[in-house]
Length: 231
Image 1 (tube, rainbow, N blue to C red):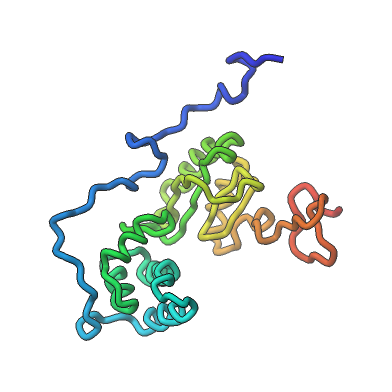
Image 2: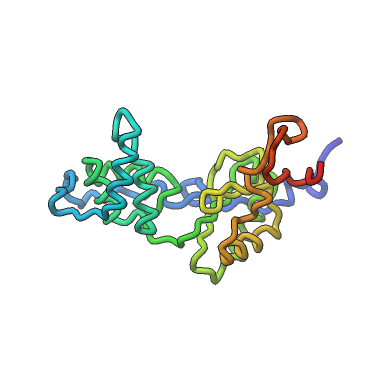
């Protein structure tokens, strides 16, 4: 059996938007600002750090043989405290960890879950990599962007891969993996965020039992996987 342009479902999909550097993710290859002065470790005597943030970073550092390994959890704490990885947040992390702001920035700028510019308090990351894309993620991303339009508290962006191929197409909403998604879920995500409810609770990966072929485990009391309710 052969597929022509009229019968091939993939041929009818819209082209994937990409930036000039070939990626769907903007900003990853921004030029380094060489005009900045040489980086030094911030002086604790002149760098105020909120007590809660300091104690959280120190607790994270204590979990690793090499305290430098705690940069990622420290950045999560700083972003949660400040709303984004602002220059102040970067400096505070560097001060507590005795690192240069340049080092901390290099980590923050590498990972998509950190934002070096002000952002909305709620993050919706729509996976647009190959598995999700083939199953409709590009259409869902467009619908999600439309649903969140006018809601300043919700930020929507594409993500190269979230590693949840088994629930494709999927998204991460404030760190909660949800899927498989359909176009109507975009509206429901906005409604759940605005109401302060768990987002798409029946589609959260944390409630998905996959221990046997039926997607169930003995004694499992969570929400049944979609399509298996009552089984």
